Length: 156
Image (cartoon, rainbow, N blue to C red):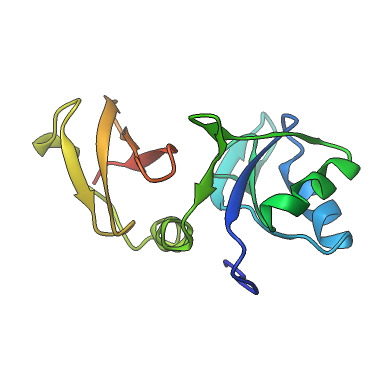
């Protein structure tokens, strides 16, 4: 769930591989608001199955802080760098994170048979338009221009 406690923008923080949950815990310990969207998956080994919560966007944690205070995140282990677009610090609108949270909660599956690569579509779950960048057998990828993020969507 997204916790918005200030008017500061959401920034995209790249983290070291497979450290997303640890980075969120460390950010919380120093008082930085963060959001890690997760999905449930079942992983199978030779002797057992286990249900896991994994990051929906690998290597990324969203943090909410004033741009002038952004360097505080580098005081923790695992933080790598912020996402920049056109030479500026990329900021993700709160509505896009809320829409991602709703989608991950199962409030939006899309029929991909009616779409083609390069087509612009409106994603009701995200309340934004995006461009289809790739179509696979069970998923397709849409780039959201406001944030520059590409999201993978399940096909219906």
